[in-house]
Length: 304
Image (cartoon, rainbow, N blue to C red; front, side, top):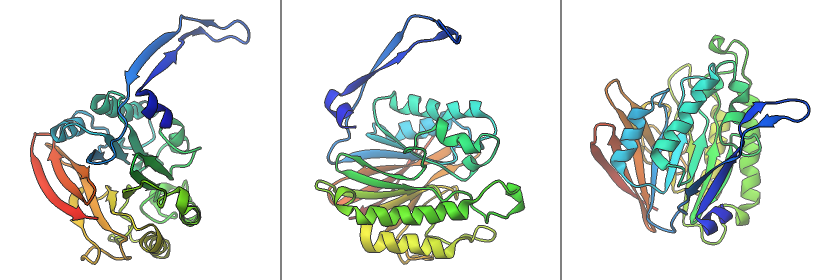
């Protein structure tokens, strides 16, 4: 990121293969594609959030264009409908291409539908990750964030999964990950220059959902406590429930002790798609919901 911010551009080099042989592989001439890159500004950062597109491309892109210029795109899970067809992974990059043109950063989070299908175990090979992990922290200028991955949304033994998931142990590893981030706070969320702290997760894990989705109370309470008592994020951005909502701590939906306001910001509908726009300034975060028909619905300003 430091190199991209400094150079404000990059070049992709591709050499198509005619025939790959054990010796003397035949290739075409190298192709080069150059792109500009826009560093995330220090303030008034414009962010757009999409999740639960479920293979839609044009409607989520149109909703993002309603919001206008962005400095960061968040794709927060279930962008495709499942991982049974690897050709659908291209839909993720098509959304990125149409919205960003390759010129601004994209933060990516895995969703529960991404856990399903023949290529689920290889999902991270096709999508952004950190050394194979689908949970990580990031720093973009004055913005710091943590991406968490709840895995599936029902208990591991649920018959829908056919004994193909082991998400409980996966979540336990993330508890250790959060604790390690707290131990390294001075290089993470407490580093000099950090003005905004975000948590990005497909599932709104601070809220108990109806059966059979009411899982992992102990782990999710622990995550909320660690975030609330140590990291103190300014906002948590989620999808999964196919709605647009702004839920402050202590609201009716707050089950496990939210560490901050939770914004659920993606609502796929039959005739339109609604996503969430965010403007991060020094004192507050403004939330604006926009749809694929050109409508804008101001949410509210959330004070830091």
